[in-house]
Length: 222
Image 1 (cartoon, rainbow, N blue to C red):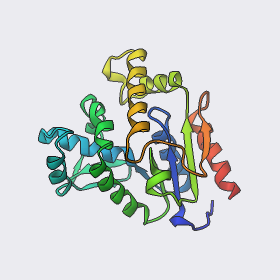
Image 2: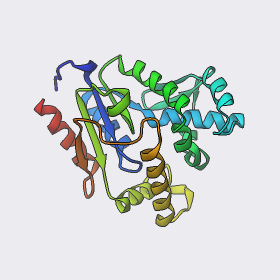
Image 3: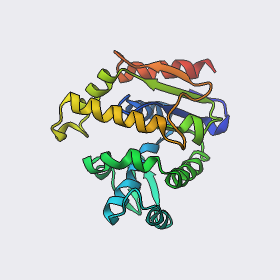
Image 4: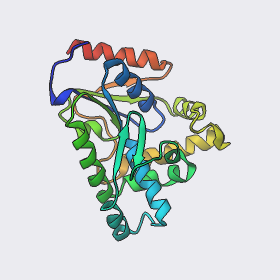
């Protein structure tokens, strides 16, 4: 498929936790031959670095010092923190507990957003997260917002192999998701919301293939 140039052919996919953004974005990027940019993984990588250095999420001075010595990059779908492949480490329960708090820190968001914008300038990027279409790339030609019910999101979370070894109930996962939603949607800096002009798709009862096909249909219309 040939796509017209605008905002370097950037596609943003936003939405709440557990809605399937990462899987959909990966599949769409592969289909289009685009680069996949997991913006949430960048916050997870920085959260991992905080944990490793014993720095509290309330220690703004320590966080600022860490920012100045942090390098986050991607190689395909692998995430690198200061040159180390941390793709699996950033999915730990410990990182999960603090990533929303870390992502709500203004100084951290400014740092990560600047990295994301630089990466998007290369063009032909599918980026997913919570503020891609609102803050990182508000002028992207293609902006989508995926949503799903709490029950569906919790079920998907439990089926995800990255979380299957955590031995938690669906009620535990629901509580985690509700907390994440509250933090993400009420934070002062870049709260989760539907981007202006975004196409909203409810993914309940839809397979990954069906969601990707739906996105492609909209892209084809432009």
